[in-house]
Image: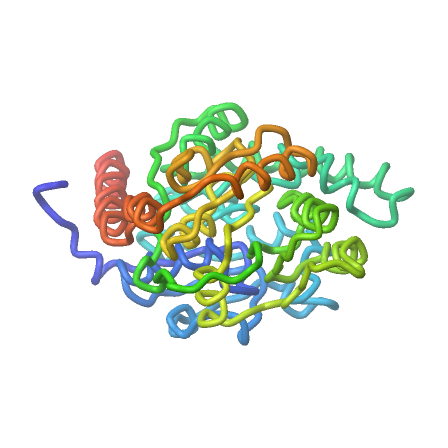
Amino acid sequence: MLESRIDFSNKKIAFVHDWLTGMRGGERVLEEMIRIFGPRDIYTLVLDKESISPLIASCPIHTSFLQNFWGVPQRHQWWLPLFPMAIESFDFSGYDLVISTSHCVAKGIVTTPRVFHYCYLFTPVRYAWDFCKVYQEAARPRWLMQFVWPANMHCLRQWDVNSANRVDHFCSISEYVARRVRKYYRRESEVIHPPVELSRFSPSSTKGDYYFVLSALVPYKRIDLAVEACVRSNRRLIVAGTGPEEARLKQMASGSRVEFVGRVSDLETQTLYREAKAFLFPGEEDYGITPLESQASGVPVIAYGAGGALETVSENQSGIFFREQTADSLLDALDLFESMEFSKENCILNAKRFDPEPFRLRFRDSVEEAYLKFYAGN
């Protein structure tokens, strides 16, 4: 921890977040940053006022020109080719510090040489890099996407690499993301794991007869594997969340014990976590806050053994991994899980490593140190 502290209360600070259309892991991190620095201006591509928390809503929120386009905010993904232009349209010339929380284009803002840009990176743009083919396969109409998608992603990759040079300091959410930053952007990044608000979760003395998934229903999350595995084995699965994959997944699950409950409240989420047999996490994620929320509820995780899950799940203590990203491999893991015993205490103990208070201290010190270095050179 630094000996001297900057008084950020008299600095003009802005947050930049890709879009505000729900309360998922990235929005929970944004809340923690607001708790650290207080309510500040937030810039975002599009906003759904009904879907954000009171804390985020307490900040002045500025949206891009996309806010007035057809289909927005519910179908904002349709305007993906315009995202770079939209994020570059904001003016940050009056700020001392801009903190972007980025999983798409937020890191690509344009700031003047005198404005410090700190980027907390959830991931390089998923559509353009690791999951480009996955999204292309899911995009419709397929006959058009086989030509349009590769061309758009080629342009987006070029913009993504070029815009990385505008960031003054990168901080990644996991070692897994830091390796990808090094590969794609040729930049080094600090690693600070996102926090989990453990006080929101508690174990239950009773257990239901279901497995649980909480996720945006988008292709790379691979919720289809969880649905297929539970349909084939006649296991009960509750899926919370919405997204463009919802109709397809419901069709897969027709006539089975798989239930879709849509967007759920915080209170409903807590109950669904703590009464589940286990939380299923079939995607290759950059980090994954939901597995930690499950462990904080005393519930183990069955996760695909790659990406950020390897940093957040303690194998055979707070969960198990399946090694191939297939429904067959997940089925084997479900069978293995049901032959094992897990203690609530081990799950909660592992989750405690990611408590918000250490994050707040580390993040503030990181911003302060990088800020001082930046202005020492300016």
